[in-house]
Amino acid sequence: MLAVISGGVGAARLLVGLQRRVVGHELVAIVNVGDDVELHGLHISPDIDTIVYTLAGEVSAERGWGLEGETWQAMDMLGRYGGHDWFSLGDRDLGTHLYRTQRLREGAPLSTVTAEISRAWGLDLTIVPVSNDPIRTMMTVAEGPEAGTEISFQDYFVRLGHQVPVSDVRFAGASASHPAEGVSAALDLAGRIVISPSNPVVSVDPVLAVPGLRDHLVRRRDRVVAVSPIVGGHALKGPAGRLMTEMGYESSAVGIARWYREICGTLIIDTVDAELAPDVEALGVNCIVTDTVMSKPGVLDSLCDLLVPPSSRSTAG
Amino acid sequence: MLAVISGGVGAARLLVGLQRRVVGHELVAIVNVGDDVELHGLHISPDIDTIVYTLAGEVSAERGWGLEGETWQAMDMLGRYGGHDWFSLGDRDLGTHLYRTQRLREGAPLSTVTAEISRAWGLDLTIVPVSNDPIRTMMTVAEGPEAGTEISFQDYFVRLGHQVPVSDVRFAGASASHPAEGVSAALDLAGRIVISPSNPVVSVDPVLAVPGLRDHLVRRRDRVVAVSPIVGGHALKGPAGRLMTEMGYESSAVGIARWYREICGTLIIDTVDAELAPDVEALGVNCIVTDTVMSKPGVLDSLCDLLVPPSSRSTAG
Image 1 (cartoon, rainbow over the protein chains, first blue to last red):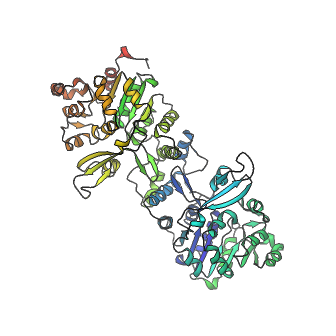
Image 2 (cartoon, each protein chain N blue to C red):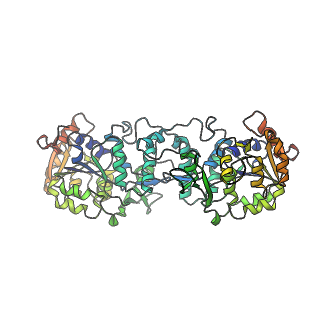
Image 3 (spheres, rainbow over the protein chains, first blue to last red):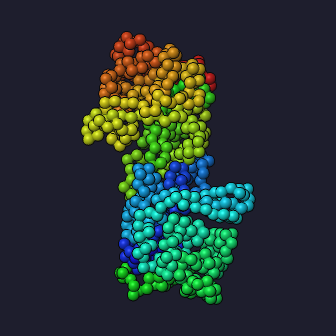
């Protein structure tokens, strides 16, 4: 069994490759819900949706999130009213949020609804929210007109375009949350646990904030492999580098090794960072140097060959 | 001032004509909210939306509800998941529900949100929900697989296509509700109060169920004019005739006169029902016989001329 701790876009791309190598029931994506947001009465789970749409082959190639063939009639109308339209909700995408919200209102846990959505797209891996309890990533703004106020992740990421400095990040609700069914078992039984190249501060940490999960990884540290989301000192996408720095870490593969050292035995870093390998190893983390930029031809496959060696495969996929 | 007690489609058509004759601030539509429904987490106000879209000239001519140029991407997606898709929500229409739900969640009363929506469409009459409190029309099914159960109006009207017999109708929440701001004043000050040709059982009665409003009409009965929604023994559209019968009334203009006699001094009935005029008058209700089928050329204007005689007009419109 392979367990993948997942944020959004980076995790989704990695899972596309892993899905070709591991039979469905042996591949478990444990997904961050700290980005979830209630908007206009709808429950939106951006990381889950990005993973589902990507694995279904229907994610917008241009945007990297949301659906192909999307239209924006509801947003246009919302704009007419002067409503909050900073969070783009496509018309097709809205169908997912309507369904999820209805089912949650009926009392179904998020994990059940996620399984239903995943099945409707014909996916056979397990996609599970880390918890069915509400966990919300909250960011304290350090400068500018909103300095000192605590805002939600989507306010930070989308409304403010992750362009404001942050002094603190916390995961509201996490301490009272429980892992969703199957999460602890997957982390116990997995022959390998992969930390996807997601943002450590706001994608991976909210997963680990669910009581007990960090301990699982500490205990099984030798089985844990992370892929660095920082390449050449910067995140390929999004504010991971900036947030690492603001949290007092270096925006580099070494900073990632330091962030993960207690829970992760092996770190995969990009070839452009080869010279950093000794510094990673000095932190007690095994280091593998290879191409990691998945948008380049062949890289996803070679990366997945590393994570799931052909000899260990449960299927030819 | 002209106050119009309003359901959905019939009221909306009448208001189109009245709007040409009365300046905006002197025309007040007091709208039923018993049909309102929460679906998929969204607050939907079908009668208000039908009136807004119709007066804005954007109602679907084909359907009589919803918007022109509508698409159905969200519903298609909901269908993929096997979600509840019996209540059609167009993509454009969804923008209205998203806005309304967001504003209600922010604490704005429904009357404020309705005024905002109305203004966004450039309307200048006052459209006010009869109450900002939740009132829900509930129907007890008399026969069939759901016999004995109480269902919401939209379950009855849309999901079951108003094809089941009903033994009882009640307005949950009405006894604890209060009129929205401006409703009582409009009924006190109006030179004329019009009861639109809406369903008396499920469109007009839930308006009158708000404590105090029936008494307003009883007190000002001489100012109240109703347009019969029953023509030739049948409703032009919808289950008004059937429900009248099930509630123990005759499905006729006379049944309407009996239903409204305490609150209404004058009833306008259709020329096809001319022979019923003496029976209406015998109930103590003045009867005016004229063409009332608003889809026929010229009828809306002549009907509105009756309701707002040219000599009394505040503007040439």
